Image (cartoon, rainbow, N blue to C red; front, side, top):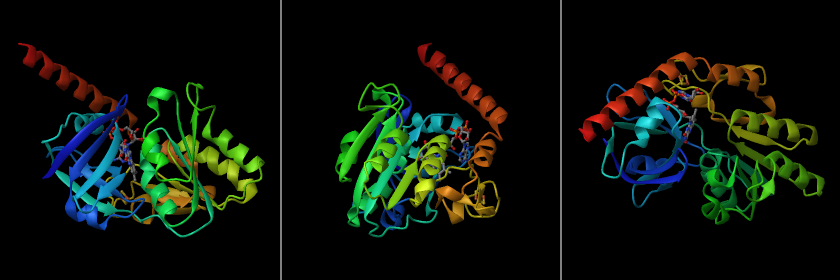
Length: 284
Ligand SMILES: Cc1cc2nc3c(=O)[nH]c(=O)nc-3n(C[C@H](O)[C@H](O)[C@H](O)COP(=O)(O)OP(=O)(O)OC[C@H]3O[C@@H](n4cnc5c(N)ncnc54)[C@H](O)[C@@H]3O)c2cc1C
Ligand code: FES
């Protein structure tokens, strides 16, 4: 059992939770994730280790409540327990001094790419972080990100804060200004990672993306997480989650992410029904 030590709402449907997990906190490296199971009948889901404190023995996860398991996780408060947390899993980010790195985080991707940005900054790179959200109220971790990059740029789709438009437009402006960019890292929704990769490819700028395929066992046995990269089948859990963005088949990834849409809808409805029953009982 893993104790929840703190929980904070960062934006609508986005929570940050600190969990006591000393072994994982000591071993984890940037870009890695855990497989987490909330309770006994529950499924295991992959969640990125957004941050860790080896001395305090804690890991921090940031998650969006999109379906049954993340909504269940969102009900846990400080003092509650998570049944299993396995990790750290996945290949750590390849960190070296590249020169100038642009790190793009879209929506929840800001939190998922946080540790990657920090590691590249600590390795001596000039890191330009572009963080974006649909609107100002959904923008997360702005203050934290300022501390782990050389320059922070903000974009919102609706223009309610920062640059009015997409992070790809900010990146295009940087390229057009003649700044030499040695590496781009993009973390966020699949369409964002695809758009960033499409933009950088003609300029020959090396681009790394952190993929989020459906994972079941995360040990390389089941094949649920397979993605096509450079025409070759790769397993996201043991060979990723980071891949060369120019080589990824994003259309296939998008299709595979919808494989269980019907079952996910059914489970979500069950969660909503169970919660409303609980609320009725408390009111009685
Ligand atoms: C390496 C990796 C790291 C991730 N890190 C984070 C994170 O830090 N924070 C966060 O909020 N989300 C993260 N995700 C996505 C997260 O795992 C899914 O949102 C979660 O599994 C959804 O489960 P659910 O029951 O709440 O929703 P569901 O209704 O079951 O699914 C909602 C959507 O999530 C995706 N999904 C469903 N099951 C899985 C699964 N087992 N594995 C991966 N994706 C799935 C599907 O696209 C689905 O349409 C990560 C995914 C991967 C692969
Ligand atoms: S999740 Fe089963 S092989 Fe990757």
